[in-house]
Length: 269
Image (cartoon, rainbow, N blue to C red; front, side, top):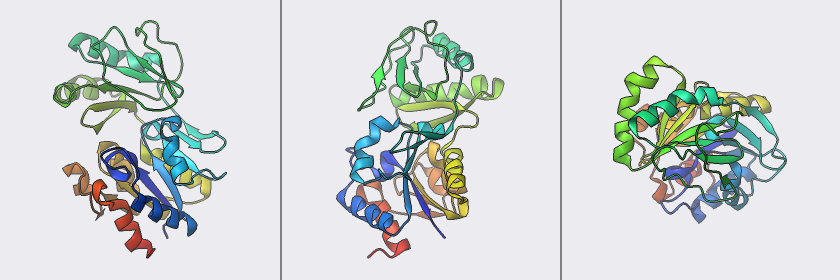
């Protein structure tokens, strides 16, 4: 029995202009009214997506969000974490060295701030919402736990960067879980950070498991949760390799694909 529905945001729940359509909003509110937990799963911090949480009314004491691609599972109301992991500054040194040697950009995210690394190529990384950007050199980066690092630039440059990572970082260092969350964003997470890991912690919190999970996604950073979920649903606009691994499929993010699937599956209308 499905008790929790996990939703990627960009190119899944959100339209191309970064909005939740009224059709998706109605369907997910109807789902919540039936007692099914609705959980957003994103690479962003909670402050940046708070307007979406409010739009869907996910502000009860038992509402949670998977943030930073699974590094932080946070209560929407109290902001208390039930699961948290990340990387140290030392963990990030190999990717910084790689970016320095090959002229690539890098932003490092703590759980509260974004640190654009200023002694590298200029980044195009942006987040709308209540989060501070604090430019710094890598040497001056504080010693603390970091949620992830991000390379953001034109897709062609990131294609080159991703290709060069395979022999250099992925093979030799085995330090990172590397995912292309969007064409212009390449993310570096700890090896144990994944949306599926965050969801597993949340399911356990409720006394459930993956047999109770439905997940929607479209990109590399959604692969884990789509494979682990009893009902993993790929959007019609998914990356081809993501569509191939999903058990179920639905319409595009522009066609209210989330609402289309949950309406039929849960017989909402």
